[in-house]
Length: 459
Image 1 (cartoon, rainbow, N blue to C red):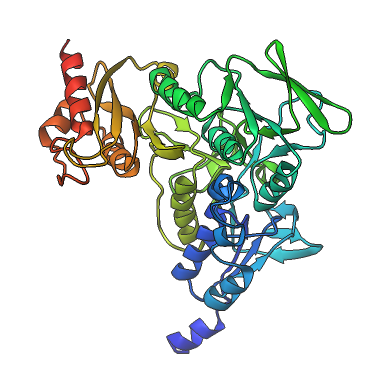
Image 2 (cartoon, rainbow, N blue to C red):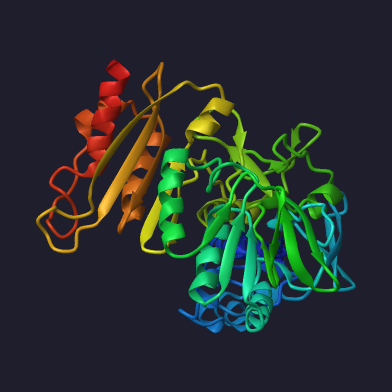
């Protein structure tokens, strides 16, 4: 028998992907590129696939439409990539020993399984959580329900002052509604931003008409069938609608069916190849990616949660390749983030001062204020950069910035330094920035901030 005859007799690899978000669809496509002959089925409970949930606030504001944020549909994946996507199909059982998945009343065998079930919005265990006009923000259909309710709502409470909560608050305010953000902690963008940076952002948002109630945990949602008010802290706020932006928890329904090890942060523990563990032993034929997993921190020893679209794509790429017989890793993460809040960009990477304290790291910081362009070029906008280093080792561990434009490139630059464990003095000695009056100062504010950091480390 010739080698070609033997290949013809081999069965095509069967790969099942559960979940159609950034991690799941990236994994399916990466698997197909790695093994073009593989039979790939994607199961999802969602009606829509391959869309950007991050765009929901801007759709609500009217900057684009729901159809515009869907990149590909089921027909595209069938026609262009030979991937079978089953929408509105719940997986009811997974048997890791038999290597089977039951969905839509049918049972399917697999050679490799990718679990990319994402996360679920945390719903506080309070009275009134199920009243009409109380919404979460996770899917296109969530967004459509919010849009419909906005037509008859005047006063809106956003519970949670993280990035998603702030984006939603401004979007709804710009649509002509009265908006109050309630937050249980004493600052906005808690955990990932330091208070001095957060306070600056808060003042900007307040100047646009959004009110804040900080140190005010939401205690109850009140109404008769439909929401009429919210009690947060020791005050009651009248409202017609509530948006819950209270954080995301890993969706563990499928991992628990499989008996996978859950990490201390509430996500599935995985290796760098995105394989999970059962009783501490790595599983060879199951892979996970996205919000459902906890991964390795690039800054501090131990795990972290990185529930970002960019991380989901990175992990999905490795999971999909490996599910198709490849050999790929997804390394430690610094979790860079960026958001456009009104007229400013805010961004961060690595650890904030609060997170560093949680890890037991003593921090020294540096800060600089300047402009996004040369000060003599028209249209320059203010930029504030803050950088953090381990006070003992001088290794850079995080950064945050506020800018009128072009935050992404600068935070990516700093992310490289954090991931590579660069010492502040080495960054200052070796970094260079491209200069053109319309794009930067001759010495970028990032370098000035690290210069201040080095001076403080000497002190």
